[in-house]
Image (cartoon, rainbow, N blue to C red; front, side):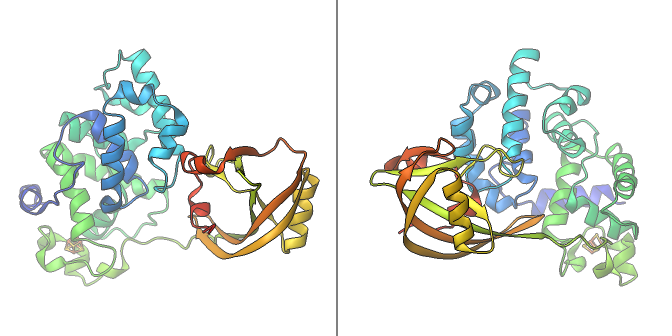
Amino acid sequence: MNIEKLESWFLNHKRKLNFRGNTDPYLIWVSEIMLQQTQAETVEPYFEKFIKKYPNVQSLANADLEELKKTVEGIGYYRRFKLMHEAAMVITTKHQGRFPDTYEDVIKLNGIGKYTAGAIMSIAYDKPFSAVDGNVIRVLSRYLGDYGDMRKEKEKKKLDQYNQHMIEKAHPRIYTESMIELGALVCKPKQPQCESCPLNEHCFAYQNHSVEALPFLSKLKKQKVFQYHVFILEDEHHYYLRKRTESLLEGMYEWPQFESESYYAAIEQLSERGIEAEIIDSLGHYKHVFSHQIWEMDAYLLRIIQCNSSQFIKIKKENLNQYPMAVAHQKIKIA
Ligand code: SF4
C-alpha cells in the first residue's frame, strides 16, 4: 500500500469536524464512543454539548447518570454512555484522573474494545496500534480483494493484522484517521469514487471490476417485530412513566407499553397492574427500527381513574423534558 500517498490525500481532503484535530485522549475517547453507532455529521452537535457539560474525565466521573443520559438523548445506544461513566470513575480512582497511556490499561476500561483502544492509542498518543472499524474493513477488503465473510471475527482479524503491519510503517495518528476518512468519503458502500482514490493503482477490486461485490457480508437474521400498545397515562397534573430495566435502552424512560394484538388486551394488562383508565384519544401509529428488532406502536392518551400501582413513576407534566426518554417513544406526539 502506498502509505505516503494515502496520508498526503488525507491531509489535503479531510473534513473539518469539531471532534477532529486534537490529541487529548479524553476528547478522542468521547468522539470515538459516539462514532461507534452514529454518523460523523450526527455526532458533531452531541459532541459539542457533551464536552461543554463534561469537559474532562473528572466532570464525567462526577456526572449524574440521569443528566448524562439526558445530554445524549436522541443519539441511541445509551449503554455506551453508562459504560463511559463507569470508566471515568475507574480513571479517577485508579489512574489519578489522568487518561491511561498504555494499550493494556486503555483496553481494560469499560466499553472500550480493540477498535476504540487502537483509535485512542494512535490518534492521541501517535502509537502504532491498529484501529479497524466498518470503514476500514470496507477499504481493506476491496483493496486486498478479500472475499472472506466480514461478519466473522476471524476474517476481520486477518484485516486487522494487515492494518497493524501497515500502521507500523506509517505515521500512526495520520494513518488511522486517513483510513477512516477514506472509507467515509471515497471508498463508500455505494458508488465509491475510485477515480480519485489514492489507493486505486494497486486496489484489487478496482483493477478487477469487483468493487460492488466487496466486502462480502453474509445475510443477517430478520429483525423481530413487536406489536406494542403504548399508553400516555395522565391525570390533571401528572404523567406516569416507566424506567427500563431491559438491556435495550436500559435506564431510559418510556411510556407504559404492552405487547399485545389488541387495545383491549393491553388495557387488561394495565388493569392487572392496578391502573384503571379511560381513553381520551388515539395518537396514531408509530414505528421504530432498531438493529435487531422493530417496534410497531399504537399510541393512546388515557386519563387515570384509579391508580393502585407503584410500578410507574409519577412526574409533573412540566418536568417531562427532564427525563431521558427512549428514542422510540420520543416520536409519539401527545398534543
Ligand atoms: S480504488 Fe475504489 S475500491 Fe479501491 S480502495 Fe479506492 S475507493 Fe475503495
